Length: 283
Ligand SMILES: Nc1ncnc2c1ncn2[C@@H]1O[C@H](COP(=O)(O)OP(=O)(O)OP(=O)(O)O)[C@@H](O)[C@H]1O
Image 1 (tube, rainbow, N blue to C red):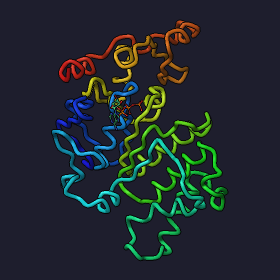
Image 2 (cartoon, rainbow, N blue to C red; image 1 turned 60 degrees about the vertical axis):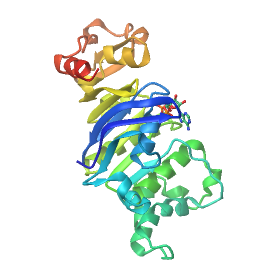
Image 3 (cartoon, rainbow, N blue to C red; image 1 turned 180 degrees about the horizontal axis):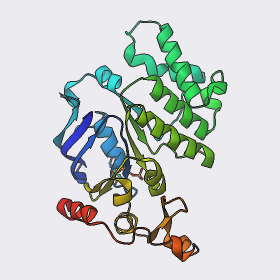
């Protein structure tokens, strides 16, 4: 197990945001963290990065307590893609991506050939080598997002944490990024991404964690966890699970699902007994 939390709690002042969160992230897994706006996803991520200190509970990175590690040691293990990509200086895209190499360099050390290669490989992997000589400040929000993901890949860490990574990406780039994230997990990365898209999680995550009222409402395989009852509990809307002609499941809001042929509807009308048991055990 690469990253784990045990009975984690956090409050901003007197307002409890996380009450009791226990989870694990393993190598080769792509885990989607879903919850309504304000449910604490970003707070949980800031705790996992060591930016915030828990009120209660513990976080372990491999065998070590997260807070016993230096910032540099954490950055050699965990790379982070934040939601906000503001720019202060007009760095070239290539230089922004090379910043991902800093945890591997000494304070005064120059970039090595390996550092440069990793940065170029990350740009190429995301299909944005053509942006390398552009000023980061000139880029669109979606292009900046891809650059920041390339910076995280250049960091060459075993764990990648992404806070709503598809925000601002066009339809094609959203789907290319989801496929890319799945590829990275298949190649051994442990990936945790917060998301507002159950359909992305259903099609690309290996595991889904639902956060509600400061606790884990459900944690398990997407097809079990992403169920209309859970989605109603999280978002307060009615959804339906449909089956495509090749047997895959998709989730649609009920108002849209009603337009689909009856034979394709109702693929997961009842919460499976294992997902239900986990829900009530944890509630
Ligand atoms: N710095 C802060 N000071 C006080 N309260 C905060 C702070 N940051 C977040 N909160 C509050 O903590 C709660 C959880 O916020 P958080 O950003 O973790 O949620 P989220 O699930 O990531 O939301 P979203 O999906 O909207 O991005 C919210 O009620 C928010 O107002």
